[in-house]
Image 1: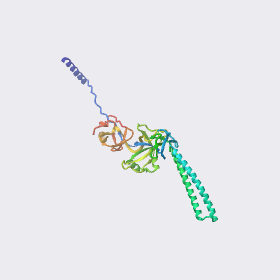
Image 2: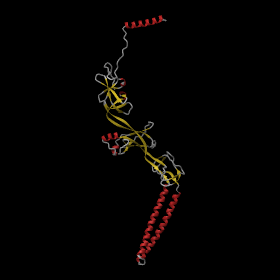
Image 3: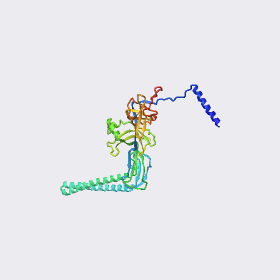
Image 4: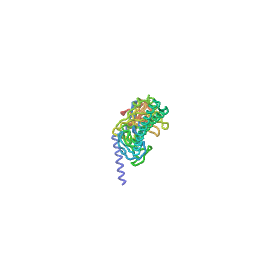
Length: 375
């Protein structure tokens, strides 16, 4: 066994001697440049996202105007209804009786008015002939006026009874979608009862809040949120469902409240979206996205930014080709690949991009013998 090992080591030694005597060079490690880029200012459309809740432009709570037993429910939850379509029917028997009674009282009042008129006209003729006194004439005139008032009162009672009878049939005030129906046929309902909500869904409002800092920036740019003309200059709005699906119709900012919420430091805005296919429903939540132009922005790839706990830095290439760390502040560019450098860099600075995580302070990153790669 020992003899075999000696032979093996002798063979390896002889091979090394042969390679050295033949003048063969061992491979040398080549130093290569890091990828770099020269930063410059550019205008960039940055998508800004806001959490939003969708609401029908005309959401109407349906409540009865009269008390009674609910006889019919003529719609279903989620049903599309048109304006004027019957939704509910309340027991109308008492209302019909009240209308008949009011109509009878009106007829009686008309008869009394007719009699009072005849008496007044008769006393007027007799007074002219000096057969009756002025007291009798005035008394008959007052009776006639009271009869006229009684007729007016009776007519008002008829109209009230007719309106109450009409209230027994509840129709939709808008075209839209029927919401939850918490009542059932046979229930006793009153003006305090909520029967359902009809969401006028031909146009939908996405309600969202914007931070006060954004409002201050808008005001600094000359925006007046109370001006309809100014609202028209807001960029188009896109609505993203919770699952990330983009709603195919674009919206526009149509209103903004004039008061900042003291507890949240935000102001409420509405973006209106058309809903011809009825795909949007009141109450759904999602994200409103609007693209604002960031002027003279310095945009760098995310791979160039090294994150160290609560700090961010990039490696700037100095004139001697060595790298030095520069602390920066950034904001999202919205494309998943780049970020906007707010502070720390200026146009013309050269930075390391790919491989920045491996760079050390003072390390040489560019080598003249190798062609430099630059974006």
